[in-house]
Length: 169
Image (tube, helix red, strand yellow):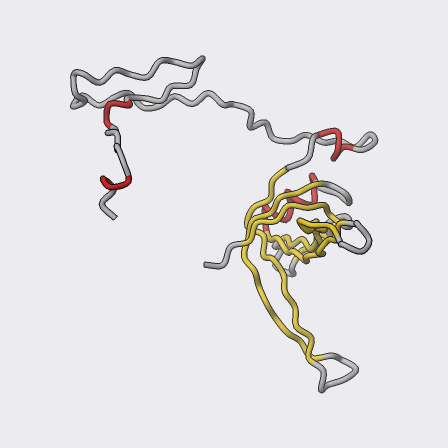
C-alpha cells in the first residue's frame, strides 16, 4: 500500500500551471517538523517535501493556501530520476507526493494574515442521525438515550465479551 499523510506549512506560494490541454497542476513544498529536537542545538528540524496536485485539488490549493499556511495532504509517494544536463553520467533521483486530497488544519486567522479573502468551506454540521432500528430487533433491546441530536441507534445487536478466552482468535 502506498499512502502518505503529511501536515506542515507551505514554504512558498503554490505554483499553479496548466498543461497545453488545459489541465491544472500545482507544485508546492511542505515543511514538516520532525518529532524530536536536535540534542546539540535544542532546535526542531524539519523535512521539506515536494508535492504535486492535479485538477480540482490543484485549483483548491492555489486558491486557498499561501506561504506559511498550515495544510494536511493525503496522497501517494512517487519516485523518479533524470540525467543531469551538464554531466551526462550523473543521475538525479526525486521523491514527490502526488496529492489526492488537501485539508485546512490551521485556524482561519492563522491562514488569513492581513486582509486576504479567505472563505473555508463550512463542514461544521455534526448532527449525525443513525438509521432507525430494524424490525427484527429483539423485544428486550432498548434504543440508546439521545445526546442532543446525536443518536447511536440500537445497542441490543451487540453482545458482551467477558474475557480474552472468549475471543475466537
